[in-house]
Length: 430
Image (cartoon, rainbow, N blue to C red; front, side):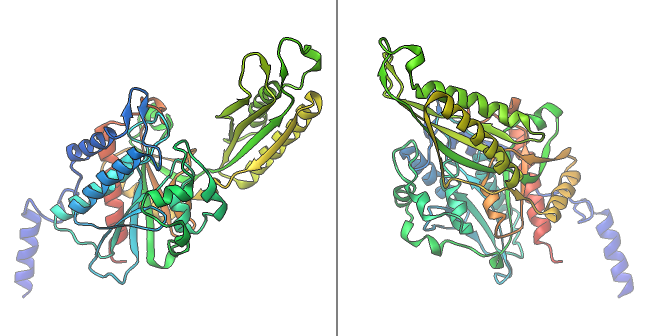
């Protein structure tokens, strides 16, 4: 028996398919890129990709990925929050599930890589496992989250963080979240049934483009995300007095738009006044009545603040609010803040999975760096209920939420291969 074992050892060492020297299983780069480009054709026009959540294009895109998921042998269903779920059994289905995925909805005039890379890479991983006849120990689950761009709706529902008042928030399609969920095949009256606990989830992983320029500028292949910033949104309303632009003296006006302009400047100055990576943005503004010969009587604008610390977000908001009070007193314009429910809490990713991602990158001979995520993601809410990690790949020139958004096929494949390796390491018996 000892001689036979020795002989088998020699054969394994000499064999070109020895387990000791076997190349890691890798994704099909061309197929993955083709699926991303095919999805990118849905909702495209001369201004960019218009696959906003709840739109006709969003529904067509969802039909496209559902078909891919079913072709990959996944058991597919839509949960009550409109998330698309694809399940693949493991050797032991009593073990907790390893989940991974992202989203396919876009911002207005968006690009073809934000969310889509992680979603279609997740489906590609299932195809690769099938083709290599690899059955994982744990069951696997691909999740395509609903309405990520409009308030991480689907992931917030899964984590139990989607409040009832969020269902009335309307996006650019004219549909509220509640109506949109119905349009996607969900049921807003049964969202409590969507909530998951960590008991049946081993981990959640999300592959994503960086949406910033750090990796691209440094020539780094992989970003290992340490944490995802929290973000808070407010609607800020300026109530002045609409009057004739030609007959009202400059010193006798209550110009809501002028007060709003001062507020925007004050917001920028406030964010710069603190040390750290916090950011504050006014990205939307509407003036009423909106005529060139009428002094604006009302303005409604958006305020967004992001940071890895909830305390810093609140500190910056307090500074901005104090400056707003001064502007209101000096201009005679009333300023009111309405906190919106589209709020994401800061989330730190799991240190142990970070180490596994690092080991996977090393094995694949890819460079890497640890970094925070300045953008919000579905992983942010999944981190509430299960150990979570994110893998970033370079965004060309740091451009995102734009038709010029681009990540190369090689970079996408690198990220997908790191994701695959990480999942297989998580799945290995401990």
